[in-house]
Length: 212
Image 1 (tube, rainbow, N blue to C red):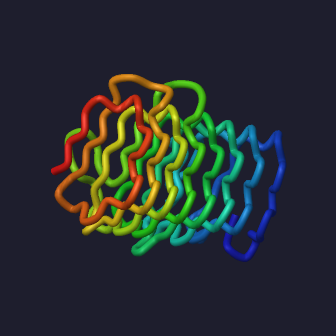
Image 2: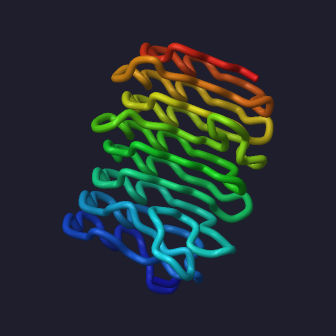
């Protein structure tokens, strides 16, 4: 699909849709494009090889994932976001993707909008959120904002790693995460600037917090 052929809510509630190739010309995903596509699985095309599920199919990358683009896509297990320079994931983009077990956000992404991943990872396996970092290293130097309630209620989030560039973690950003796991970990790197009110309130399954 190229930019000229995409539109808002284009595939809304196409519950049998399992996969789609976004070609090299596509630099954004419109509002609600895959809203309610509950069978959409973890797939993407990087220009030559079918890989997993990613939102940057070529070197230019997806610049914007609009609001509600993947809301209610309960079949998605893995999300990998590269993104173009100053890329943004907007409000409610992945709201309710309940079976996500691995989320990895690499460099170039700048902003994660309010409630973008709220109620992801609420069922299935314990989840790992690599938000600009892994357990071993920072992998992003551009992420600046994790907005209010961005990951609110992700109850299966067991491992949360965060890095970027003077990152501001908003109010209630991770509130009530990790309530469905035990022995969890939160680790931030030295690029986190501000942690907002209630940012990690109610994360009862977290056993280790490392603020670098």
